[in-house]
Length: 208
Image (tube, rainbow, N blue to C red):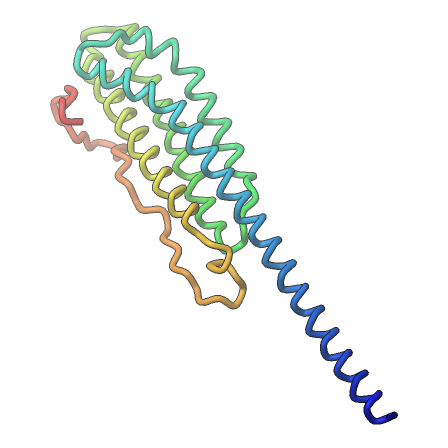
């Protein structure tokens, strides 16, 4: 009986250790899942904020490009749009992200920062357009065009990153799981190269 009792005790110990290991794994998986879901939710929220701030602004800039819009309307809406993008960029910097996905978070910040710079270019173009017409018309149209292009490209690249983040599963970021290819933020032309104008005559291209 003593031998059977000893064997039973060993089995109980083995089962106990196995149960502890399983519980630890389950707890780690649950924590990893919560962290990932929080990051995904935050990225989706930022995507909606980006679209809400940049979308209407780009639409109004397109109207100006077609000579059908009022620059003063854009001037009135620009401060709020710029502030919204700056706030989103600040929130993206502190968005908790699983360690394997920090590069994707950096990509989100990068695109929001690019959008903020684009609004600064739009502001410069509006200033040239509204204050000194004639001699600065070419400068104004070039700045507005480049600003609109950068806003559009930044928003598109941001949305692409968010969709990639949303498709990630907890198993993809497990410490010993096979590495899932994480595509870095694609390089998108900024159209901000000094001395290079995509439209040499400075006029807005209807196909922009």
